[in-house]
Length: 360
Figure 1 (tube, rainbow, N blue to C red):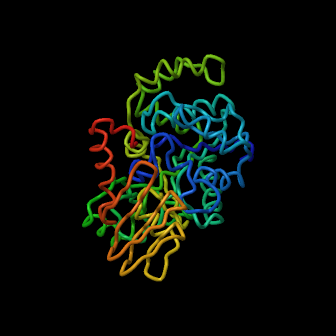
Figure 2: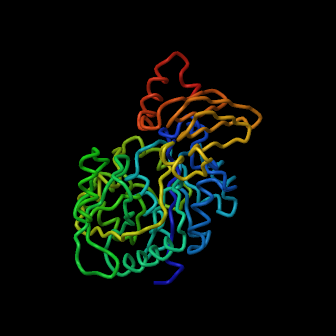
Figure 3: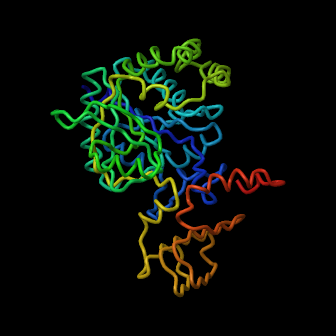
């Protein structure tokens, strides 16, 4: 395929509620430099894919309120390549919207869809796997995903089961499973034919449009009234979005389609979706604490992640083990690391307090 037929969509609309209180509705995690690298998560995602795809073929789909910050952080992208959704409708709607928009530019396009907020340490391996995915998707009506080789029975990730057959680096997908309980996750790892679902997809625009026509025809019908890359596109999208079904691309398409293929990949990957995943990918002191400021004194303290927004603040912690301690301008969070999946619940409960929204 011609390199000019390659496109990328960076999905940057989430609010990262499991990463609260650092990630907030006004300033979610994809726009933050979580690990202190000097580049935010969305900037790192752009840097990675720009090695393969030119800036004019890279799009960002985000919430309308994040269009300006997206452009501030990615000034090399044309402003018209940063698309604001009028409301959150999960990932099926934004995938069909962007496939339709790109098809209007190039009907032969093959596109990669990348989350904006994932960590990938092995970038060369990522680009090599993506090259294979683009080749497969451009020559076949395949819906291709990258599956991450699991390193532990994690209950926070979805899993992809593949059919183990002799192929050149890719396999037919058998099942998708959303975040299983621990015992099931352990059995997945023991079986050897399951991968983590990283939410990285590659497909030809025609192939994904056919899948939507088959499995989500009502959504296709709703989008069909809009003219893409035209002056009235924005107002048309604002009209139809409230009527669209709120469903993920996994539930709506990938779990039902028979032409889904997975490429196993060891990418040094993490979705950095929880404080525990940040802890695992951060530098530690001699007592296995991940501390982001220098003015910290710890005694009989180990296995904690301690993230303080104010670099001028001194902290002293004594006798704490395996905890999350996050201090921001408005919120102090202290909870066991093993409870990090409960943070979404804390956020919901806090919203129910009087004026609780100020902490979001």
